[in-house]
Image 1 (cartoon, rainbow, N blue to C red):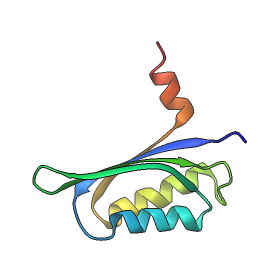
Image 2 (image 1 turned 135 degrees about the vertical axis):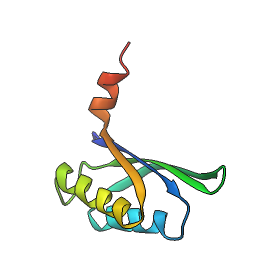
Image 3 (image 1 turned 60 degrees about the horizontal axis):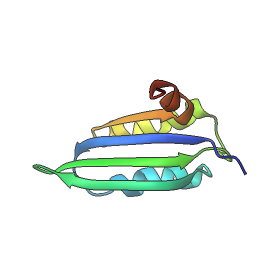
Image 4 (image 1 turned 90 degrees about the vertical axis):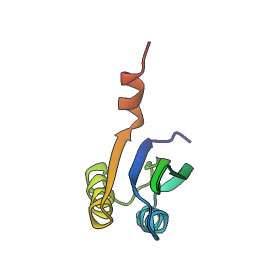
Length: 93
């Protein structure tokens, strides 16, 4: 089964509920988290990267983007999304 992967990067001040808010949103939209890495750096800076499969998502890519970006705004975080195809094109040798 072929996957459609999306990279999500989240950066900001650490606070409760960041992982929960984003992962719950993804779960509710039938988006599978393939990989997740998170840590607290320096003076309380939260950094998270996620690789998610949007192949069976209940909503289109644009709605996923708006939803995750809205969570970022609500929590005062910087959130970036990048489709795997764009990532591959940018990093091709």
